[in-house]
Length: 123
Image (tube, rainbow, N blue to C red; front, side, top):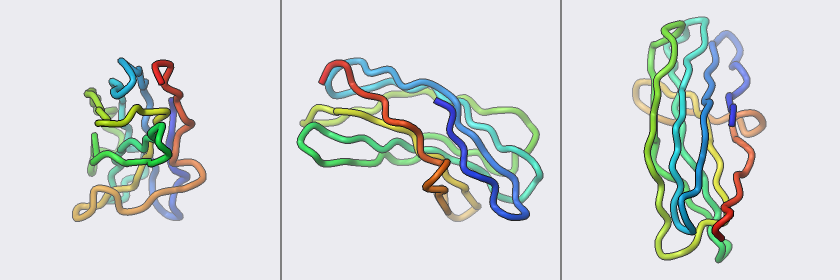
């Protein structure tokens, strides 16, 4: 997956790049690199996951990674696991946000900041 919002006018940009690997019907592991792309704008980037369960309900995770004021300083790596109980996860995707000092997810680009669905082969 490579996901990043379109740049805001007069601001920089960000990008999440990584992998979702389902480990069973109710969990997946992620390994994600988060980039804060210049120009410096006093905004960072963050990401979380949106998942759909087999019963038709969806859920979002808390923020799994966040950078602030790191423009041009490379990437930060975040890895972990997401679980869904008691229902089976049907699919999941990453959502990238602009972040400011007060809000870990200040704004979302609904066109380019949301990744493609990754389907769970264990569903």
